[in-house]
Image 1 (cartoon, rainbow, N blue to C red):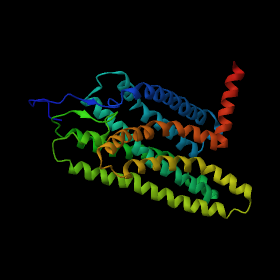
Image 2: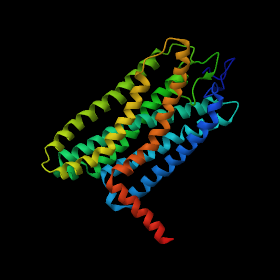
Image 3: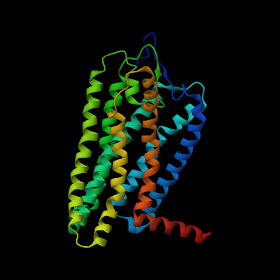
Image 4: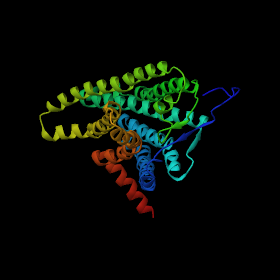
Length: 319
């Protein structure tokens, strides 16, 4: 964006959203609103039970509490803007609001990548070194691990957002997206964006490649340890402690790799379909996954299910 003292300052952006598909807007408004409410309720309940139930005062559930809070923050940074775009004819956003939304969404996504790898390490220690678990994963260790995840995501987002907002923007101020997605905003810059592109590629390696490698190695050791357990019941119990996390990891990173790794269409008709897919896939990543996380952990974790049932029974009994 040009500085305010220049002749043609850019004061905001226009978000296209689903303007080219108006018949879908009302349907998606209802669907996303319902999913957002489920996100708030599901993740809110998980946070509540991990705080109130003393049996869940463990590193694993501390990380889960952070993940639930992160999902609430991530969706709240973008979903209200998406919902408003479905109802407002003129889908505009100020430059400052765009920068804040861009920072928050990128920060939350980066934090989740690191946090999931921290959760994998916790499961590795719990299964592969159970006798040393309380020492290795003490409060003095797992709290800084979670705080470090937030800090790393925040610093990376601050760097990228700072690079973007310093760029000059001229001509069309139309973002072909629901929100201020950083790559969509970069396309509007009328200057050399090679530094931003290179930094994004480095960040993708750090936040995608490194965590995936770390998680993969952790689960190789975890699975190898589980297979050496003599009893079938022991194997089932050990696997149940990490199955929810593994499911979340597969969905989360599977969606990310699909987003950034799918081939581009060359024909105009295919490009139109691809344009719609490029918007809907990030929407799936940003709304559906945070909605699935509490459901997966509630269904696949016996301790969480018991804590939720206990919380519900207490509420019903008091009534």
